[in-house]
Structures are given as C-alpha cells and as structure tokens.
Length: 219
Ligand code: B16
Ligand code: MG
Image (cartoon, rainbow, N blue to C red; front, side, top):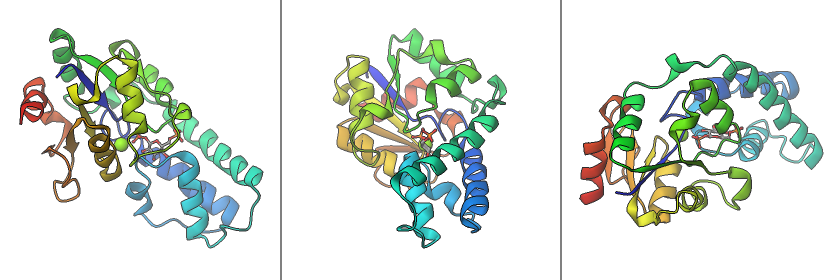
C-alpha cells in the first residue's frame, strides 16, 4: 500500500447533517416542500448539482426552472452550508482519524482526498488537517461524479501512485463502487449490508488503523 484515498464527508468528519439542514431550508423556502429524513443519507457523495436535481424531482418541479435559476438555488444552498461548516473545529474530526493519519505518515504512505465536495479544502482547513494531506483532488476537474471512478483516479494521480497500489476509504455505497472501478482496494466505514462491495468494512472510524488498511490491501 503506497497511497490512501480518503472520502471526506462521513469518513473524516460529519458534514451530512449540515448538508441536510441547508438543503431542507432551501427546499422549504424556495420550493415549499419538506424533505424526508432519508435525504440526509441519500445525498451522501452526490455532487451539489445532482443533489439539487434530485430535490427538484422530489418536489415534482424538475422542468419548472431554467439552468441559471437551478444554479442560483444550488448557490444559495451553498451559502447556508458555508455558515454551518464555518463553525467546524478540530473537535469535529471523527475518532481515530488523527491517529490513522499519523500512522500512515510514519509508514511513508501518501495521502490524498477524493471528495465530491468543492468545499473540501475549506473543511480540512477548519479541522486543522490541511497539512496532513499530500493532495486534494478537485471535483470541478472531473467529468463524472461517484459512482464513476474519476475522483479517485484524480486523487491517485495527484500523489503519483498507481490506483492499484492504493486503498480508498468510503462511507457511501456510490463511493465504494467508485473506488472499485478505479482499481483500488475499498475499505467501507458503516453497515456491512450497505457496503457489500467493499473489500473490507469497519463499523466506525475508530477501527481504522494502518494495520487494518494494510490487511485489506493484502487480502
Ligand atoms: P459541495 P463526499 C459530498 O462529499 C457529500 O457527501 C454530498 O452530500 C455533497 O453534495 C457533495 O460532497 C458536494 O459537496 O456542495 O460542498 O461541493 O462524501 O464525497 O466527501
Ligand atoms: Mg462520504
């Protein structure tokens, strides 16, 4: 294992609750609908514009607005979201992650972020983790979102490691699929029934250690 490709939301910290809060407010204010709680997990790993389109579909308004109007709504959601994530601090890092990053650095493993979020650099800055990573893939530069492999291929390319020499860590089904299509080894965090395609699954980030990743890689 020469590189580790990290999903951000749901692996390094929990931003899904902030995404959901911002989408819910947008849906209520602009579309007059209440989003069901299931949207919090359903939108994990889904790009901003694809999330917006899913919400419009739910509201049965997919043909009501122009592309510019849809973009403006997605931008408004992002403004609401930025206010929430502006409050993140080091205490919001998931348990075990700082220790894992230290262990990987000691073992000279390169670290890259493969998040669908355009806010990933800002979030890592707020968490005090920006310097721990060798690279952050830019989702604006990739053609297809998860479950397509693009963001993981870009994350591996940015650390100059072949994807087959990398382990990817994900909490979302679409993300695990993306890691596997990229040719990397997938470690899932969460419910093993939801993440069946992963090579190995741990219940929580606390269980993520260098040796767990190395074992998954050698399997
Ligand atoms: P942004 P991940 C994803 O992050 C989130 O899970 C998803 O809910 C969000 O819509 C997407 O990032 C885009 O985020 O609006 O900040 O660009 O799980 O791939 O780290
Ligand atoms: Mg995620």
